[in-house]
Amino acid sequence: MSGNQTPEKRTPKNFRPDPYQYHEEIELEIETLTNMGQGLGRHDGWVIMVRFALPGERVKVRIYRNDKNFSEADLIDVLRPSPHRVAAPCPVFTECGGCQYQNFDYPTQLEWKTKQVQELLWHMARIKHDVLPAIPSPKQYAYRSKLTPHFEKPRRDGKVTVGFLKAGSRFNYVEIDRCPLVSDEMNAALSRLKAETQARQDRKPFKKGGTLLIREHLDGVTTDPKAIIREQVGDVIFSFPAGEFFQNNPSILESFTRYVSGKAAESGATHLVDAYCGSGLFCLTAAKRFKEAVGIEVSEHSVQYAVKNAEANQLDNARFVVGDAASIFSQIDFPGSDSAVIIDPPRKGSNEDFLSQLIAFGPRTVVYVSCNPATQMRDLRTLIDGGYQVAEVQPFDLFPQTKHLECVVTLSKS
View 1 (cartoon, helix red, strand yellow):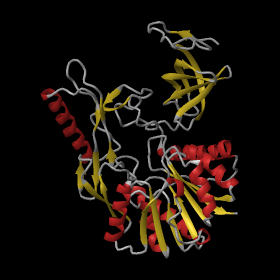
View 2 (spheres, helix red, strand yellow):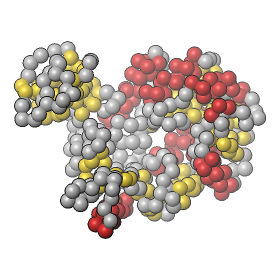
View 3 (tube, one colour):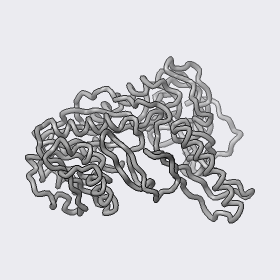
View 4 (tube, helix red, strand yellow):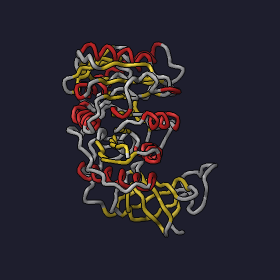
């Protein structure tokens, strides 16, 4: 394979020199996007992945890694731009690893996210099923309610870099002065935190790096992870520690939770189980649709706040229990045949033990919410083999300008 090598940078020791030399420059057409947000093209039949390149573009790239089956390259120049390419509002876009799609117009972002769910459904689960168009976020910028900037170990000159991981790096950070994904108030808090962090460094130098928190909520902005804050979703108000997990795009949460609760209820189930309930987001927003709603959570701390939230919102038919991973449904005293189960596991998905318990419980409907469609599709195969069938697939774009999305798959008992 041919190209031009730029020798000005030393080749890394672990670089694999086949099929391209380090920093070899080539031109190629970008055909599609990977689910990691990279443009994918082929050069002499060999797959090359390029961050920030868009489908339909002809680009000039510089190789920096060869794997067994593909290479990765940096984008040098866009020779023929996509008609969907737009100017990114962030000055450190392509340097910061937080966003992948600020250069992509929003309607086309949604189309590609929908397409990627469709492809994952087939390639990972061998399921042919229609995927509904991704539901857009009402806000495409200034939508995030939580920001966690990091700072690495201070440099020799005492300067503290506060920001986010550099694109393609696990160790280097990009200084962030302002993030367009959060509000003006949160950006003002970021400026204050940066100044405070540098002042602390000047008084007593940090020995290692750390993580900061900025959280916008119903009553303002806090930077204290232990502060108890409030968030409203529909007519339900939630209280929880600022540092704990809670979906962080408030602009879409009402429609998101309404859809999930509606899918859980439409089978006629009289009882609900929310199997990864946290502080009660899905359980409490769905409780009025059911005779009884039970949230299960392995974290006792989260259950305490879920109970308080149920009491504060006068949802007397909702209760919460601390679940034992080995017998997650043991404290459920109603039959699965009368039930719908909502699951919203972490990015790694559910494990086989949990899924086997879920199948044994036998709910008439399972509503599987996931922030990682790849692990979700893996788990769908297990549920289908256990007697369930896909009824509906609906992506939600909770994270505009990024590769991330939430996908809701409704399954019914065959």
